Every structure is written in structure tokens, then in C-alpha cells.
Amino acid sequence: MRTRVKICGITRTEDAMAAINAGADAIGLVFYPPSPRAVTLAQAVDIVRDLPPFITVVGLFVNPAFDELSELLQKVRLDLIQFHGDETPAMCESHDRPYIKAVRMRQEVDLLDLDKQFSSAAGLLLDSYQKGIPGGTGETFAWDRIPAEMRNRIILAGGLSAENVERAIRRIGPYAVDVSGGVEREKGIKDPAKITAFMRGVKCANRETD
Image (tube, rainbow, N blue to C red; front, side, top):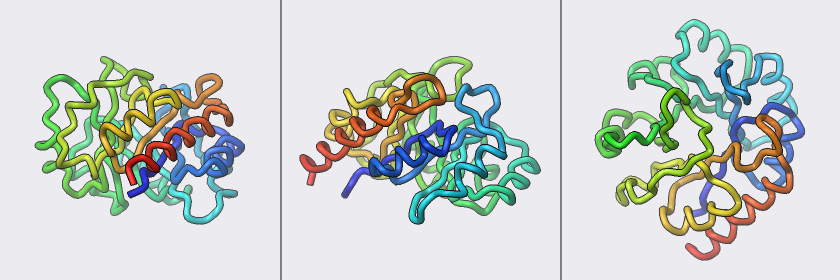
């Protein structure tokens, strides 16, 4: 099965189109103001307006207030919600929208238990843990911590780049990979050449695993 790709931290329409033209399946919009990749509602509406069909738009949130998220969902097209904070399963399910739950890979994390807790999630996104930073650390984690039996539900994130994505896919076989900083020219600004190189790595890995 082909590994899907999400390019996260999109802040400009031209970056969204560069990702899509290179073959990405999804783009991620960050609705977390402290992040250097955060977008405003107006930015999000502009980016989404011109997207071609069959591209999944993912909105990333960190412990959002229920009313604020509900209002935003009415104003901008989001196909999938990515919860990146301490949200409970009930909170994630409360907006009647498909969601993925991000997991910061602390040493004590029990992925099999979390997979049961968040069985309603479309998948679990695994990111590196760094104290005080919800995501986008630019660091990898020990991939061998991922149980083999749940890898088809995993979106692998954390420090991926053109240099390591092929190796990651061959080793783990995740359902999808997620990249942000690894394809940037500077924080919040993507580099089309890095996106193309990243997608080339994904395609090479998929050819080897077919």
C-alpha cells in the first residue's frame, strides 16, 4: 500500500500548491498561535479556497476551546482535525469530524494502550517529545518503539526529511508520513526543492516495499 504524505505547517497558498504538485495527499494548517507556523482564519480561508479536489485539509489544534473550534469549523474547510494537546477521546469525538490524535513519544508512552483509548481516531500521529513543545521539534525518536501490529494506523512524524524518510518507511511501513520543518527554507516558509526531494524519497521507498 502506498505511503500517504502530509505536508504540515502550510502558511501560504504557493506552498500548498508546491506540496500538492509534488504529490502530497494532505496539507496541514496550524491553529496554535504560539507556533511560528500558525495561520489566522483569513490565511486559512485563502489557502483552502484554491485547492484542487481530493486533497485532505488537516487542522492542527492544541487543547482548543470547544466553542472556538466549533466556530472555526463553520468558517473554513477542514476535512480532518489533528489534536496535538492533552485532549481526551470524548473531546476529540465531540465535533463529529474525523480526527487523528498526536502522541508525543515520552519514555512512558504505551502505544497499544493509547490505540485502544483512541480507537475512534482515524490514526495516531507519532511525534518526538520535547518538554514544553507540542510538536515540530525537528527531532526523531526511536522508531523501534512502534509495535508492528499497529503500524498501519500510524502517521510517522518527528524530524523527517528527504535524508531519512526513505529509510523510515522501509523500516516502519507506516500508513503515512508527516513533515514540516524538514521541507522548509525558514520556519513557516516551505522550500519546493526540499518538498520534491522528500516526495522522491517516499516514492523510492514505496517502490522497494511493493
